Image (cartoon, rainbow, N blue to C red):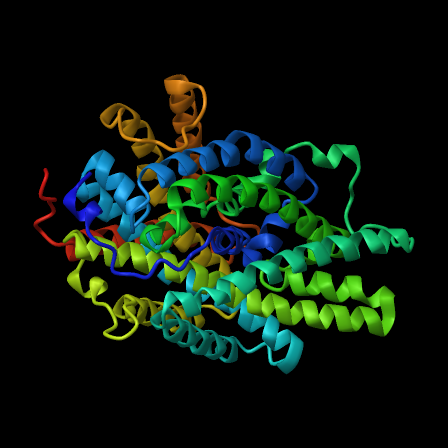
Length: 467
């Protein structure tokens, strides 16, 4: 391993196996996009099953091997560095980090729109943008404190999100027990995948499976990463696959597809499902609605804690701008990385609010840009897994993906192909797009600008001492 990878950790080892389980569940259960995924209708369940078998399981097993074999601080940065060199590692880290800065506005627009619906009723895009900006800077403040304090936000968020998804499914099944007809058609034919109806939202479904590697970004803060990472991935993967299905089921039982909002769809479903139960239902729905708001914050805090540590580690190695590695003198957290993230998110929120009068459109455009950058980073991570099988064959691997090199080849090809296809599908306009052609060109231009800025800000000397 490189000297940078072997450097003494600067953080306290405060993450237990239970912390990692909650952290992974909080990262992958992206509650803000479940309504968008459910917009596929009953065919979602078929695509979810296919994705679980063909992508989610291989992806989890690959990440378990990498996380156990290379458990140092930085996660995917360390893996890509070892496989492809620091130039590719810095590029993967850039897209991984910037995606979060882009993603914050989309999630907090979901929070703001739901909060507005529950308490204010203004439906004003600028009011919602102001709420989202305030939350962005609260997140920056949370990210500055010690991890053994801030970790409780994603830990509690995982429990809250699981409760909401189970609540959605339970209330939905309860409505059937009371004799209410499903809001959508669940006949057998509706489960047959239809490309024309599903293409726009298939990338969202794939996006909803990603995040296993995030806990490895804090590898030097785990008690026992070699043993804990594989076990946590297997257990959290099972929980996530079941819980997502319950959430989608509840939404589709409650809200007709023609009325399903990709921004407030989860709250709309809860409100509908609670009505048959009278005051008790209203109370349950209100509590779950508050939980939904908290879960949105938990989502962002979880990912921000991870990606900013990736950026800080890259800066420490000299493959990222040095400012990202500046640690808080008291808390030893990459606080300036959080501040830069907050500035970018604020600019995006103001700019998109000025350009669109629809919260749904603001959410979708920012979400697509964020997700595309996120997926691009995996186009370097998955090949790194196979390269390391050849480049570091004798490196100790406490866990190893089964079936030897044929298994490694198969998993790498399938996961990389899934990611590449999803990247292309993000350029397909979503139903109801205001200007389909313009939005596709804008997404491409924004992605190229992101790449150009990343290449421009990377330090010119990118080498590790053993290369």
